[in-house]
Amino acid sequence: MVGKGLFRTVRVRPEPVGAWTDLRQTGRFPALLFLGKSPVQHEEDPMPNIAHLYFRTAIVFLLLGVAMGLHMAMSGQHNVIGPHAHTNLLGWVTMALFGGYYALNPAKAESRFAGIQYMTYATGVALMTVSLYLLYRGYASLEPVVAVSSLIVLAGIVMFAVIVFGREPVANPVRGEALRH
Image (cartoon, rainbow, N blue to C red; front, side):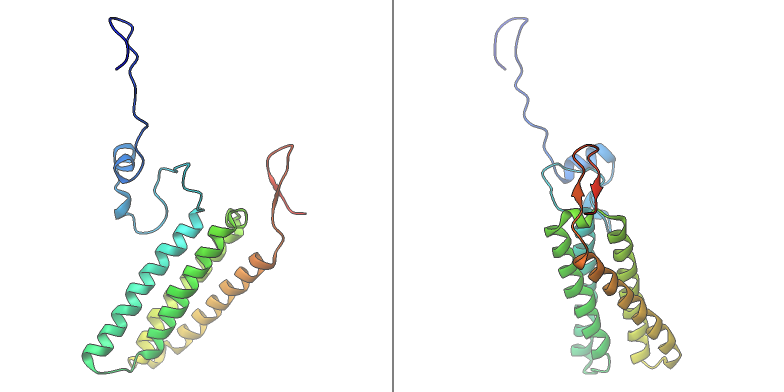
């Protein structure tokens, strides 16, 4: 406090940011959220939401891939090495790379098409991981599901290529909207 008597100036510390602030403002603890960003957008976090989604989804696939690897090592049966490799490469590595690209290109990350691309790719990899694992475990009837999920993954990759090779959106100085040049 600064000053005396009735006219005191109170120095207020800047509002803390982070998990505890999010809990106090929303009633939800962000560490318990499975995917997505914290419901409170912090100005000092320049990374787009889709980059956060990709990184968090990549970690889920990394955990799944490591679990498959540990199971193979502990059991001595390496019959699911294909699904293990697909989970780590398409789930962990590729999703982390996609997230990195969107973090470095926030203008492209904000498009609706980028969100559709995320949903397409993530759904395809999740479906492929489960169906390929079960196929390698002896469920031959899941081969069509593996084929369809592979095509969904391919569609997500093609969509990402369109985003990467597409033009950079530029801001309209009059209306503040993104335009394509």
